[in-house]
Image 1 (tube, one colour):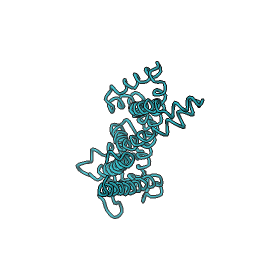
Image 2 (cartoon, helix red, strand yellow):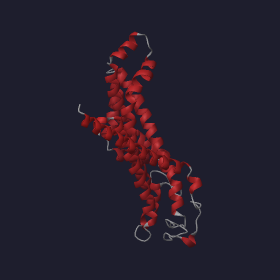
Image 3 (cartoon, helix red, strand yellow):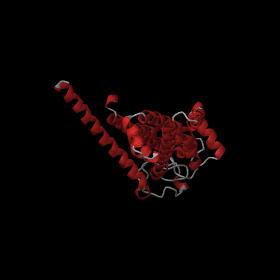
Image 4 (cartoon, one colour):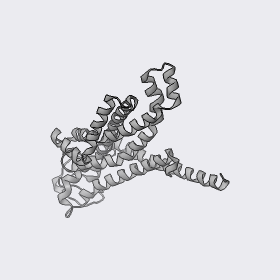
Length: 282
């Protein structure tokens, strides 16, 4: 390999590392702001003032007020906690569930338990994702927790497939056979040998899914199957104010822009993590 090629690869790696730091800092800022949102709101996000309803953006209310006179900036800030941390909880649930099922199926490798669980995952994958989530959330009765359960039900098979394929590949490696011959227990092999070697692609997939999950969760709330008013959640806020899009557009655009900004940051972070972990994708 020539020195020119080596220098180019080093520049690319440094560029990816810089992007990773920038987007990780931006994502960290979003997480911190949402965590301490109760202390960052300039006004009470639930205080109604009908005499100041649908006020345009001004020095007193930077993003205006909604139909009940509530400060939109405060509602967007306080809604970040529900929208962002609900998404992170959802991604964590599907990642852990799918990985556990996939590793178990991969280790079984063709036994009846592997076949049954994979056919169940095929059944979930056969339905259009968001449509199936709407049906499940509707049956469960709506609400934020039920929306999370509905999206988790349609999202875990992807992680199970990834974990299973990676486990099948690792199971045939010499170091796994050596661990079996050494008398290591199944649990030790799975958690100390296989899982650390397959966690990379799973975490990258989870990072890339944060933005998608956030939009799907907001979509269910927009349709009335997620968070319910007066709870401050970006999707439900857009649903509650969609009739004012022509007369007071700021009440709908404010939470919409918050969703756009958060999804963009997490998508860019996920893309950069993928590039950093897998040099072939750069």
